[in-house]
Image (cartoon, rainbow, N blue to C red):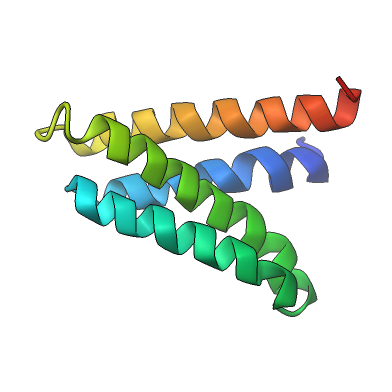
Length: 107
């Protein structure tokens, strides 16, 4: 069983990144998702309790997935859905796991 900390700070960003990667097929849509994810991440503290707590990691995941797609899609515009999702998942998992390690261990 995974802990609440892992679910909130690792799994939810990965879900957000994979959903964005599954939906976008062009780098301009990915850039819009990146901007929207960052904008909603800045609005998350003003949202009601649980929505803000669950929403913030999802919004950060969408922004990380958008960043991955902005970099990957111009290079390979014919990527299939699994390639896009794997690319976004790798970026989101790496960033969120390193963030969790740095915050928990205090490095």
